[in-house]
Amino acid sequence: MNLPLITRAQEHNQRTAIITDVGAFTYEDLLNFSSQIATSLLQNAADLEEQRVAFLIPPGFEYVATQWGIWRAGGVAVPLCTVHPRPELEYVIINSGASIIIAHPNFENILRPIATEHNLQFILTSDALPNNIARLPEIEITKRALILYTSGTTGKPKGVVTTHQNIQAQVTSLITAWEWTSSDRILHVLPLHHIHGIINVLTCALWAGAECYMLSKFDSELVWQRICDGDLTLFMAVPTIYVKLIAAWENASSERQQIMTAGCEKMRLMVSGSAALPVQVLEKWQKISGHFLLERYGMTEIGMALSNSLHGQRYSGYVGQPLPQVEVRLVDDNGKLVPPETPGEIQVKSPGVFLEYWQNPQATAKTFQDGWFCTGDLAVIEKGNYRILGRMSVDIIKTGGYKVSALEIEEVLRNHPDIQECAVVSVADSEWGERVCAALVLNPQRQLTLESLRSWAKEQLAVYKVPSKILIVAELPRNAMGKVTKPTVVELFC
Ligand code: AMP
Image 1 (cartoon, rainbow, N blue to C red):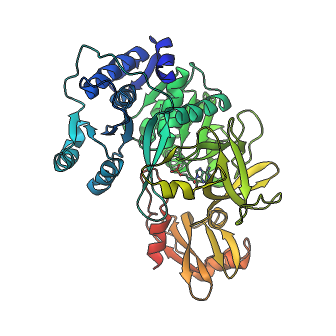
Image 2: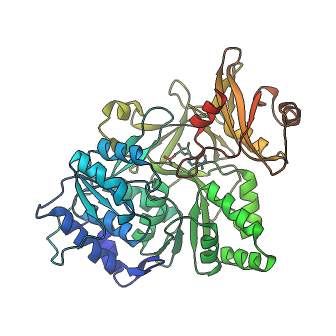
Image 3: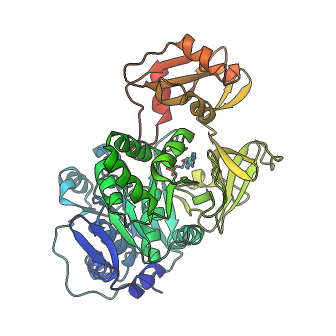
């Protein structure tokens, strides 16, 4: 059987699939180019039989054609991160057991030595491709398709393996919920080694027969320029990107601001996810764009699980309800369902849930309970909608016997007139068990003492939630997705 993604693309043949700064590419271009790549990977073999192929290519047509080429040859795609230093790239390549590396010439210097050292096949995207297309294998959808490396809070990143069937379930759930059609046109600004950019944006667009406009890297001005063209229908990003776009809007002339706003108003949907969306950001974005951002919750291991509704009422600070094909439950420390309005761990069951952590059966077994995937995230249902309280291991702080949510405290601290950004973490403490600590980025030319912050915060938070240590920093440590890396914040206090 041919992969459904490929069969569907054949139906859209002449339609535009990908647009980049070098040109527009149709579905037919994508099919042709990816079959050439598949042929070259196969080297006369019938099927790559789930060999892992690591690839490092900037966002654009070549990235997509390579990913499809790997799939069409029966391989497992292992996308690498464009901003990772050599040790991290090497870790992913070796851990995944990749036998082939495909690199854009920009990354030859960093990747060729790894290939030579480990005796791996090395291919440049600039190498000539065969003109005679081989007979490509039939791919069972139960086969492994993708390994994405996800950084846990402890230890080395784990390879999350999804099958073609998992991907299909993740994609069709979003296609249904957010009503993707072939008339959609989305601007892609996210990294392509992470689920958000690969599944929610790229694969959903191509599944729907829509147009995906790819920027080679994120740049606020370029994003706004593209939005101002006024022909996009969808936009999806992480909260940090919305913060950057807000800053760029605020710096623009009022004439330009009107055009920017008008461009946003032409879209049918704007989505935020991958990290908690601060209410302040949601409100500012609503003023600028006229859009009440649709916030959703998901994870590399499960795809998307919860989403605000497309047409119904959305609530700030909430991530809505389970998506189509997804079952969600909240359980307590003993694995029992929690009573209404009580926080519990989010557990998920769906055909989109991943197959396994790559070559790590113990870790895989540990994260499932009676067939439910244990996310490690805490949430509560209020008025029928889920509110995320954070990662149990880092965001739930046990201080003086109280359990407090770091995300809830951050939400309050962001309302302080001197605070631009903040990250609340727990630091081990002999007196309190864990102490609530806050790393703060202040607005320009502002100062803040612990005493003044505490007296302000006590007006809004129970006293045990008020940070007892603060640290003023120039910026918060973030990963390639723009997410604050809390373990690094904790280190700042030690
Ligand atoms: P990743 O696998 O990199 O996508 O990270 C998944 C984690 O991001 C989840 O386990 C949550 O902790 C966090 N996350 C994703 N979406 C949200 C959201 N809307 N609000 C709060 N946290 C989120």
